[in-house]
Length: 213
View 1 (cartoon, helix red, strand yellow):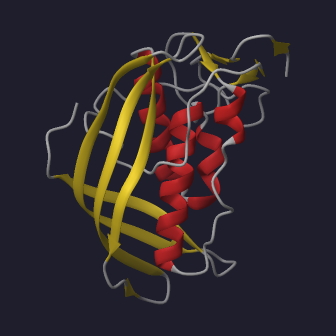
View 2 (cartoon, rainbow, N blue to C red):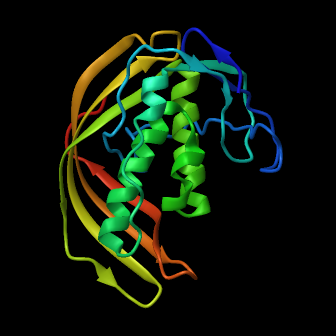
């Protein structure tokens, strides 16, 4: 990681590769139109501070190269450690860490809270924003989780969600591009139980109740 005086520069090159490479290359799935369809939450904060260079992370994709600057303060604003002991706590951890991943343009940081296929979707949304030269900064306003439907190996957790979100530039200083906006969803989180007995999010269905920017 190379230190600079400005923001962290995340070199995001999108060529096909494997997880064994030093930089994991990714692509954008342009069909992602809904705001954070894989879930949103707001533990991230944008500010200007000294920072360093790190590779972007992702999954098996292809596309163009981009430089993304992330403040040191944003990188340090990590959510609480994930709690995956129950379906409901796993949903909350997923939302917190996915939001953090959106803010710092690094999907890998949230990978412990979700399955591989869901990780690809989260990564794709990050790269979709990067191609638009923006970052997502979002905050959970309210979250109402319904009663989980649980089997031996899977669970479904309904939710009602309200968020605020903004778009920030990927350039130095992360200038505000738009927002804050408000979004409301009726959502359903499908989770699977791991061999270790913990729960992770496998997929999300979200119905937007407000127009999305």
